[in-house]
Length: 103
Image (cartoon, rainbow, N blue to C red; front, side, top):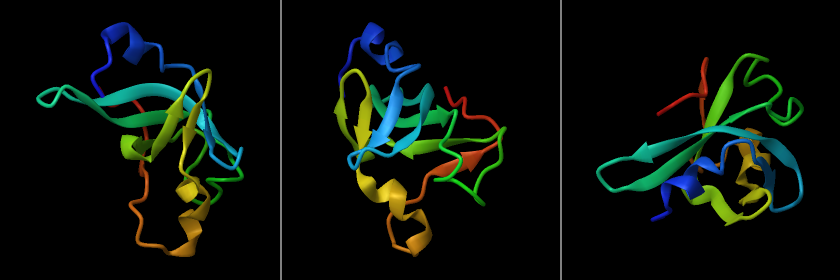
C-alpha cells in the first residue's frame, strides 16, 4: 500500500467488519514497515467482546495482519477468517497485547 500520510491517518477511528458483516473493532493505530513503506497491520481497540471472548480482556487490543483487509471505505472490511479464530485453522491469528499501539 503506497498511501499518502493523510490516507493512513484517516484509517484511525474507522470501524472494522468481517465481509460477513460482523463488527470486529475500531482502528486505534496502524503498524508500518518503514523500510518497505507499507502498512502491515491494523491495531484494533473497542473490540467485539463476543468475537474475542476468552481471548482478550477489556483493556487489550489486537493487531490484525493488513493482508486480511479486503476493502477500505467508510468502514474497513476484512476476510471472515477472524470469525474462525476458535476452529484451530492454520491461518495466522491476530496478535494480542496489553496495548494496541504499535507505531
